[in-house]
Length: 610
Image 1 (cartoon, rainbow, N blue to C red):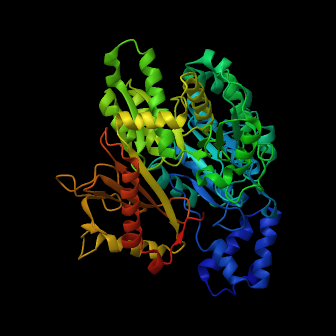
Image 2: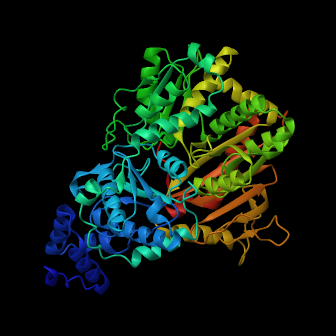
């Protein structure tokens, strides 16, 4: 068979395919590659083998299928061998402490891959080296993995999930001993170790090992109990919850969240939410939605709204398929459904958690040790609240890996980290989970709603009250789809050399640019030495423009999807409550940025699908 290959005319491709046929033992992916070789399907072979998946701080995420560019048995084994090898270098006590592995409900019958199978293979690799493994026996939300790392004092955690990606994708997410997602230089260290351990070890394919080894333990029951015990520290109004007449609908969007959100409501003594029957059970086909991502708004929530209208519920809670994110929608008495943006929900949860903390805090002086965090592309509403109330607000780079690691540093210094959020509907409300957690956030949002109802108020009314007190923060975020890396590079290069080398735009469609921060190159015009304070990364594009009218706009590439995203915000001082005027001004600014900076027609960019 191997002799049939040297027909592609590409030595590297021939080598990669030959190596694959030597290493792979999954009959489906093996047969698929042999079939492609036999047919001389060079283009398809190139798609599967031209580039190995790149291991980054977000781990891996790609389509399931054959070849080194896809998620499959062999690439999972190779990745885990590299990760194991790196852990051996970092932790002399790895064989005493061990690693936790969780998984979601994704599967891909054509390639024989599934999250559960990938988790079992990862466990096999670790056990073959004498590493204890805490392997969940069943699906869990992603936040259970970082919780387990912290709770049991483990060296690391692995979560097999592609979160809200399309159904054909899967992923491999890694947590460090501090309970947070990895940050540099661990990603590079792991990536190098993977390259050095591509040949499957002697026992890596021996699936019996994970099933029979005394080194494998199932933490499901213990963690289920301990997690729901831990989040009860965030339940402040049990009596109100018990008697509340507010009705909620919950959807897990065919993911893992249903049973866990029901348990979270129980832990808070809330009446159980109505579950959307067509979406409550895990289904890797995601049959009722085009994208299994509640961040996409109303399209994903159609069935939830229908059930809510039928049952007389006024609030919908939606998790993404691995239950680490939360979307919330509310229907006023005479109005239509309103889906809150991630920034609006961040404002509500941040205000609520500070209010609850302040009512419990014995000494006013303690506020000096309280912190909240948000990513740099998220709303600055927490900064406005912090300035008035006296606690600390910090912004980090985009992604919970940065917020989780910073939160751990602050906690280790004896500080109180009340809340962290990112605009992509991610919320960290409980320091026992140093990552976004849609399960605890769902129960907290429900308690907040129930409390407001006793005051004759709603989430929408409370949000207005927050903006009235701390200043309106109007945001507008979206993205363009672009599969061409050269186009993306040229778009950002043009902004960096706008009217000559190393010059940025000074205006945009009549709006004056006051400062520019480029976290790809490390330039910040607002700093005396022109150097950015936040860490920089040449591997991703990210430029922030501040305008003289108080507007802020960030353009960045996504680490996991073929998107160029933009995030815009207009911050007004308290007292400036002409919301329509502010919205019009922000709309005009966004239109100018799209037309002058993105140039969608020239660059052939596809707008976000409606």
